Length: 179
Figure 1: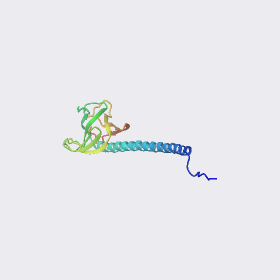
Figure 2: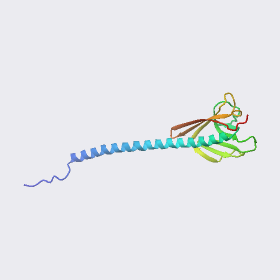
Figure 3: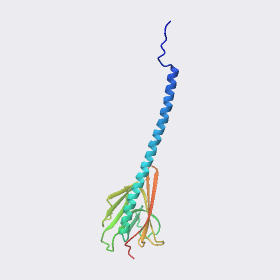
Figure 4: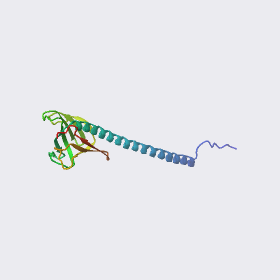
């Protein structure tokens, strides 16, 4: 009598092994993909939070040292120094002392999503301090007063990246406001 060699796999065993392996790999793959998505979401949110905080810290520092707003321009390029409502701002210039020819702090939302800072009289901002800034809203704090006469401002930074939004708000008073 001949001995039959049963050391190989049958077709049924091979198909069952491949099926179980495919199920196990798809479960592991779905966990892997979900973790990558969660990491990317967290990374985007962290980047937006960081940019908002850096921009707000810089604006707050310079506003506190200022005495007034000397120029403010909306997204359409209109001078809004006599407005008393919340405005979407393209450029705002803060005057630092009572001498009009002295130092000014310039903040400008340009290139669509970047906030730039400059100092001086030439009205140009050249240092990028934050990106992903979709809107810079500024409103006079004193009810009924325009930007020219206010003693402080409410600032709202709206950031946007890959469909995720972050909003940071703050109220800041001019420490050296001229009366």
